[in-house]
Length: 126
Image 1: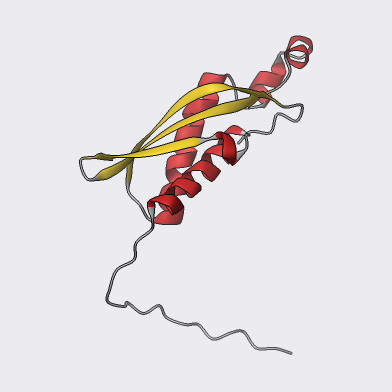
Image 2: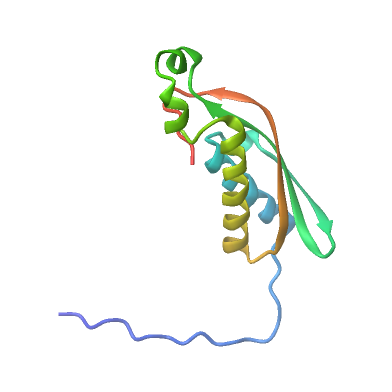
């Protein structure tokens, strides 16, 4: 029988931590790719200063089911999270929360420009 590991209290250490712009960009691209069902390499991310907070601008495609699938089963759109507009609004909140939680960075907003679509049979979206 093994005993549980002892609890270790976190210590506050003097100093600072910095997360590089490249690391934040990679995180933002991964969060956007997950939320919109596309490859991270298809997502472009840029940062700007917004009165001391970070504003994230994304340009990305979004995954959609084939039109023949939607034509034969219109309910599929709702099952995948709604229209492209609805899914983009939902993705904004998801991306902001994910980037903030994982990096600790304070974002003021996430702007998304949909640059195209990726046809996906699975239609996996967040």
